[in-house]
Amino acid sequence: MANRMKMSQADRAKQFMPFAALKGYDEALRAKEKVVVPRRELSEEMAEELDRKLHQIKLNDVVTVVYYDKDEYIRITGMVSRVDMDGRILKIVNTKIGFEDISAIERGDIFSSK
Image (cartoon, rainbow, N blue to C red; front, top):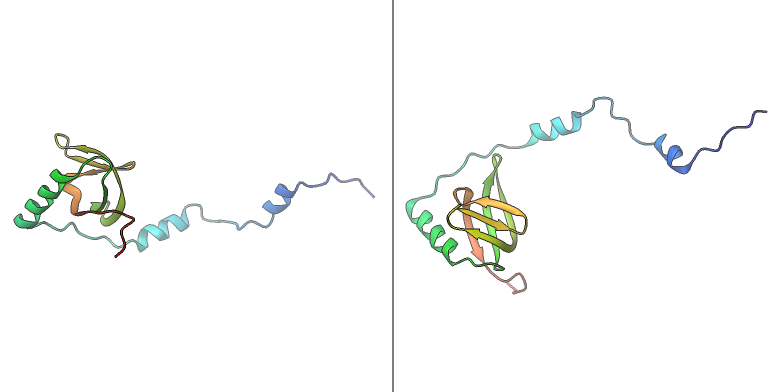
């Protein structure tokens, strides 16, 4: 009987991990599933209202923003960490959003009840 080295738990666990025969296949499938949403043009009134709201935003305000990014609309709620009127950028925590990509913005307290 030959003495064999005892296999570590990590190496033993690797034996039972799923095998991905086609590397990147899952990511490609997810990309195909993504529905491309065209960018909506804002009316002049909506653009003016949005501009008015953007000028009222201050550092540390909690806001909810809907913005266009990579063929989809994203909703984010968080604290404003930067408002750059010259560069036309709003930063919510670590997410930079160009003013031209914003379709809606609401200021509010995350602790208020609705």
